[in-house]
Image (tube, rainbow, N blue to C red):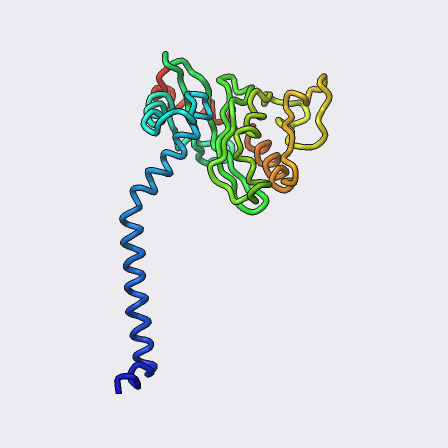
Length: 231
């Protein structure tokens, strides 16, 4: 009798509903229990990236506590800086040295890569003419190909690039034939990543679209938030 009851559609549906409810409850409980840890790790990931971006310390040797301390004492986040041209809000970091002298600015950069959205920051010197560094916090590019944009050795190629206004309208050139040493493009060029044409083309496009935003954002930042910056 019991065996027949177990074969009935009602029993099967009820059993599936109970099991599903238990699994759902377990997943929700696990999510709630680990939510704070996940959020803390996400914050630390960005804090580590910002410390490295501005050269505030060697993130490979610093402890998590030291990274957080450097971030909290020398980097200031403004997440509501409005581009007066587009009306969009952007995140801007301001970094200072030990004596509260301005080091530079970092602006959020983002765009569609070969597969999905890429998010990161580009840091520039106080005059906005040279790149201090670039970092990518989120992407879904192909591992070993486009995913190599996160490698430090490749990102270091951006350091020192000239991003001052350019007569031909393009600020940096990623990939393509390497320019001659005496070419105006030489100080604006970064070698591509082999086999990652789609990712590189996307980066070249959206970075050049967003670099002009830097000066507009700086004017907005200094006009409305200057009293909050310790220099």
